[in-house]
Length: 282
Image (cartoon, rainbow, N blue to C red; front, side, top):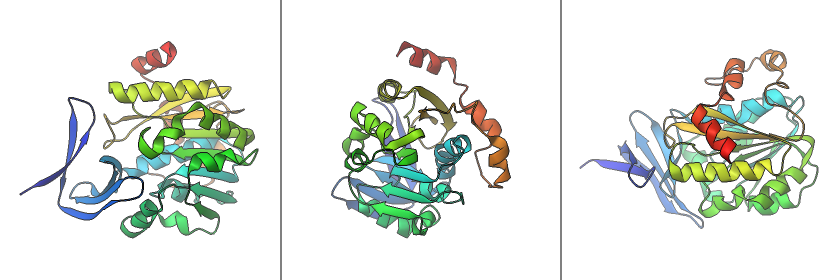
């Protein structure tokens, strides 16, 4: 008998993946955590029945949440990552020799433990000596930091359960204060397509706009995320994500990426009209 993992994208639309093997299943202190295998996608893991990463397309998400801000900030040395239990964001950051220190704050230690076991490529950066892991609430962590980080990346789950607090006004204000005077905040910004996701995207964008002088939105196509059309938020105290991007400097680093490139960086901020209309209404 075939087994399928099904994620609910809306009240009338489901997304299903054939499961050839269940590798792990647990109810952690915070959420339901499962790891599956599929012939096309490889291993993938879910939290509360939402796909977090698959081996086949995780590079898209992690390229775009990391390399966009790193191409803009001239000297991102001290970085905070909130969430990101799969390790992919930290892996990409660790490819930059100029990074001196990364604090990663993940509320659910079991996510990291399981991902280290089943996704060694994604979690490889977690063993870097520049990385400090904290297993605690990211809201409480960032609240205690002032003028500390060049870059904050909020690699969170969707705004429910343990991820809900990472989409609030108070959290974005705390991030603003934890950043240095030229700091950048990047967050996963949900999808603009389905009504439920759209509502969360607009709420997050409005709250970030209220806090940061520069607040832009960019996009990527991630096949296994709801609708495939996914957004990221770029907020900064100083830097424009296109005008201040230094692609000559970034190219000189010689980083090999599977998705990101400077042309795509610029193009990702060219949003479809329906998204621009939504953001302008908000």
